Amino acid sequence: MLRAASTTARRRASLTLTPGRQARALLHAGPERRALKGACWPLYARLSAHLAAAPSSGIMAEELGRWLRERRPLSEEQLLFCVHRFRKFKQNRHALELMDWMEARGVNLQLKHHALRLDLVSKVNGIHAAEEYFWSLPDIFRSMKSYSSLLNCYAEHGMAHKGLKLYENMKAMNIVSETSVYNNLMCLYQKTGQPEKIPTTFVEMQESGIQANNFSYFVLTESYIMMNDIESAEKVLKELQKVNSVPWSLYTTIAKGYIKLQQFDKAELALKKAEEVLDKRDMFSWHCLLSLYASSGNLPEVKRIWVSLKSAFKKCSNRSYLVMLKALKKLDDFESVQQIFQEWESSHEQYDMKIANVIIQAYLDKGMTDKAEAMRQTAMAQGHSNNRTFCILIEFYLEKSKINEALQVWRDAKNMVKQQNWVPARELVNRFLKHFEDSKDAYGMETFCECLRKLDRLDAEAYEALIRTYMSAGRTNPSIAQRIEDDRVDIRPEMVELLRAVSIERGKE
Image 1: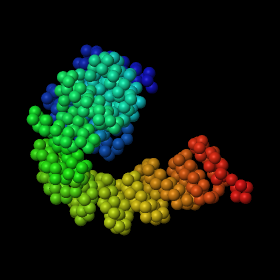
Image 2 (image 1 turned 180 degrees about the vertical axis):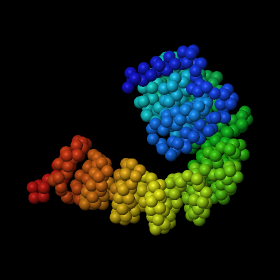
Image 3 (image 1 turned 45 degrees about the vertical axis):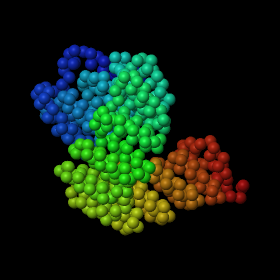
Image 4 (image 1 turned 135 degrees about the horizontal axis):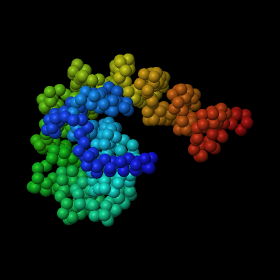
């Protein structure tokens, strides 16, 4: 794999450095660059629609090929616009697939684009794939930006040792002169539970003559809040107010600190300041206010922000309804939850099961099992149910010790395998295993393991739970050892003695 990646990287270098290839950066002849800007949104809308309808691999290439056959203009600008949009909404696999498509057609990637691709590889394929991609790059592409991106990958994966080692190498190479490097280093400390090291890193950055940006102050403020030092966080805010305009996100960060300390009056003041400076067209900022007002128990402000959000946009997105419903549910305003859900039902363009799951959970919390079940059945009949739908009901029934009902939900989920390629979530399987084990119910565990067998999900974890259940129930079953061997399952060495104990036939102890 590494050899293949190296070959690809050399080809990238060749493509980038060849003047003729640079001249052919546009993939399809068309209007001038200014005119092409207008095609960015249509391309993104088209790709998004097709990927939402059929999110399988290959759809991206098919749709781009169709776009070109229609002789529509296609530029690097349009493609990178789509990459950034996909990434913004955490559709990282789509973004990476698009960059792979660009590379396969010889598009000239700049240094910052290799750093972007490294980040996407890490998010989609994991840190080891990101490391392999980084080291496969020719030296000319291993710039400060790509090193900084790898440092950020280590931060995202909580790998303090590797991240600090990389940073020390960067210092030795004298490539730590950008704000992003220090921001990523501070994020590394933040995500590895070392907030006390962030203030000194911030000072080191300033003493090195490197300008802090809004994100630097954001991480610094969060570090103080993590350490419950709200006074230092307030000082950062006051210092920034003297020299610069304060972004809304810094006010909300301070508000989180106040909420954490249950200083709700101060939290409301901070959130009001955030509302004053936020971009009214930024939906995420409204969502943040809704969630934080809910966390502070302020129902009137949640409802006021909802009205403001709706007035700022012609149509509310599914995401906005989801955030609002979660906020109302957290505040236990069941009547408003029902009202907002009905409003969404009458106006949505695309069904979102995440929204339906909120109301199902709300019904269960109120003991309205029949309504929750009716909604699940309707959603299932329409092909909308997802793993979370089944988890919600199964967890509810298991907590109420209604095993038959829980197993019925499981069977319904299992019956959807052919329709939606349903695979039971590990957490869902574990809930059943834990229940039968805690109940010392060997018969129930056997029944459930047979269900797992039919789904080809009977693994070592399930067999070990089965062994422990027999052991705690004081029962034996000589067939277990043979079944484990037949299924070619490897249990842990420490389970072997227990297996021998439960495999002894009665009367032969």
